[in-house]
Length: 146
Image (cartoon, rainbow, N blue to C red; front, side, top):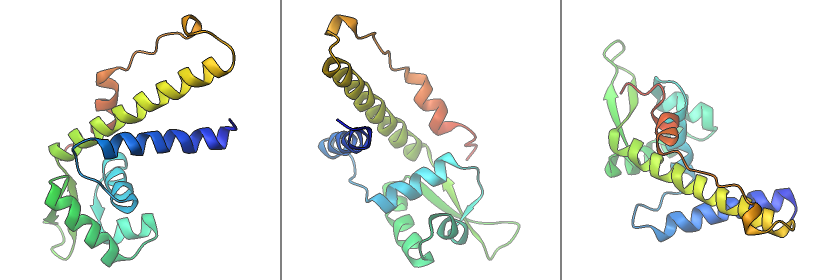
């Protein structure tokens, strides 16, 4: 399978695994926003997020409304400039993304094993790929004091 199709199949497998779980079903926009809030350095504002993602402020607000109802982010008035509302991370959002990152790693491992088998190596030739539990936590929690 060509590399571009492998990448799409990996993403499909991640999404299918996510949909099968009992958790919330996030839109691409909501997931992109959530990942941006957690994986880029704060502070995050509606205006800044709209610029980063090249979408309108009302679209950001709607996505933040949904993510806020889920408890994945919270809004807080900026004490330094009361006109600004800051978007902050939450523990619940961090847990969700940690679990989502585990889905990505598991799907990637399965895809690599399948590609190795297709290339002619037997299952015994596939080196084990342990999934470090704490590595995904470091990725999501890195630099998230809020």
